[in-house]
Each structure stands twice: as C-alpha cells, then as structure tokens.
Image (cartoon, rainbow, N blue to C red):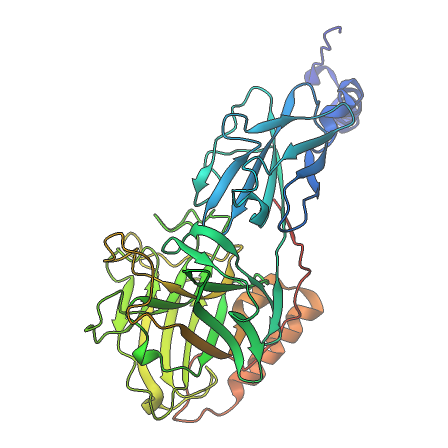
Length: 448
C-alpha cells in the first residue's frame, strides 16, 4: 500500500475541517472492515442441569485464525475451573465464528454436571489463558477482549415473592466441606415458611442452602425466623448472607466475593454464650466481626435480623420478634453494629453480582473437628424455619441509577416518605417497607 502524506499546513485555514473529514473517510476506506467491527462473544447453549456435555457459542469481530476462547465453569462451593481441562484451557474458533467446549470432562464422578455458571472469554491466540482450579473467582489476570456468562440452576422453589435455587452437591464442598441436599423433605416451603434441615440420609449427614435468584445490590436485607436459634446445636451454623460467585470485588482486600453475614453459631464450643455474629468478610480483620448473644427464646422464638448496605456503611440490627426494619421499639433490639468504610482498616464491599443466600450446615470439621466425621454435636437432625425475607432498595442509590420520569417519581416518593412524622420508638433507618421484585428467568446472562 502506498504511503499517504498529508500536510495540514498546506491546506487553507477555511478548508481544514472539510479536508480533515475527507482524510478520515479515506482512512476508514483503507482500513480492513474486520478491524472496525466490535469484538463480541456469546454463550449460546449450555447442558441441562445435572447432565454432562458441551457449551456452544459464537464470536464476531475477531479473526478465528488469531483468536481463541477460554472457558470457565463455576461449581457451588467448589469454585471456578478451566475447561475443557486445566492443561487445555481454551478451544479454537471455527471459520464461521462458532466454538464448542466440553464442560463435562470430570466425568460422572465429578461435580461438573452441577456447575451453575459458564463463562467464555475471547483472547488473542498468543495469550496463555490463566488457569482456574477451584478458585474463588474468575482469574484476576484474565483480560479478555470480550466475555459472556450464562447461569443455570437445578431445583427451584418460590418463597417470599422470589425464586430460589436449591444448592446440590453430593460431594464435599464449602462451607465446611459438607454435602448439600436438594431433597424435597430437606428444603421445602409450607404455610409456616421456608424449612432448611440438616438431615441424615444413606449413612451420611446432609446440609442445605438456597440462593435468591435476583441481584439486588445496595439496600436493606431482612430475615425473619421462628426457630429457637439461641439453642442451636454447637456444631451447626445458620447463615444469612450475600455472596458474589464471580469474585471480582477489587476494593476489599481478601474478600472478593462481597460477603456480608449474619451467622448463628457457637462454632463447636457449646459453652460459648455469644451464639451469633455480624460479619463483613474477611472476618479475621479487626472490627469486621461482632459477636453477640441471642437471648433465651423458649417463650417466643421469633427473630428479625437485617442489615442496611450502603456505599459507605453497613448497619446490622438483631431484634426479638418479627418487625419491619422501618418500625421497631428499642426494647426489641438485641444488638446492632454500624460498620463504616474507613480504609485501610475497614472496607464496605461495592455492589456487584451478589446473590442473597440462606444456609444450614455442619461446622464441626472446619472448626475444632480434628478431622472427625461431620455431624451435629448431639447426633440429632436440625431444622430452621424462615418465615419471611424482605429486600428494600436504597432510595438514594436507585435515584442515582434512574433518569427522566422514573427518576423524578423516585425523588417525589423519597420526599414524601421523609416528610412523614416518625414515631419516637421507630428506627431511623431510611427504609420504606416491603418491595417484592418479580423473579428473573431461571437462565441468566451476564455480559461485560
């Protein structure tokens, strides 16, 4: 191709804008069409939950001869894994822009069939894809030209106006290297609420966990229970928490999964009177963990726990009885803790792709178990009943994300709520009652 010489000083001032525009058109004409197209990747199909197989997808804007696709799967409690294998962590792109990857290479004896997230990343052929082998996040060094992810889930149930996925793992996974049951007798909803059980089947103990299938972000998360959690078995933990499986939170050292917890547990120490805790992970950091005591509940087992998550703070509140986060009396408060963003000692996670979760699991092997078999301390099955879960969005955060008529409507609503008289016994937290958000599709696509 001949060299194009252009001297702007040789063009009269009055004609320079037109000349520059003409040069731009010439350069665009001379540029190969492929380099002008945006590079993109799409995960088009994934195997049905519980089966092994291939994912397929398509790529555009990239030369198949000079690009490749790195594939990653996420298994609940087991982490991220490179596919087809850790030694062959990428697949080629065919001439038509398609790709296919075997995501069941672990075989029937693995948990590949229980993977819930599938990601495909477009990379130059010269790049070596970073390998994931049970990692807590997609590899931090991955710098894709484009990436697409698709989620799938197994058994689901409806509770508190939302759709929840039931975690299933017939092999040991975290937390605590438990196995997790999706049996209908272990996780179910009836007129009393959502039941989670630690139960004994086929000679082994099974734990349970459910995942709320909507990404909420900042706001108030409230859980009501009707079980005697003051007397929970010392080897059992009941958790109410956020968790981001993608693990791309960069602002919080050591806590990439945006984990915020309420946990009821004595961690195998039956004499511990502080039987519950409020946590911003990592719990080992000073001020990130606050232990407290759930009082004796034999007369009335009702509890409400909620945290209000804002960009600069997290306010934890534990209450006896069932209450709205917007209205409760001072005597109802068991404990509360205001955690503020104050680097480099304290970091409030940023909102991301976290899901809210509930679980009931055996902690005896993780803490103080000495490698003993996982089981409740008294050898009895355990059940916790959750009567309601409510999410209330943070008005200020919603307002910042909206514009036009929707933004003005939210502003008017917030002003109306703030103008209402407050009871002297009510919480001052800026929440406004219950908002039920319709469940999303059971197959979600996340692109970035």
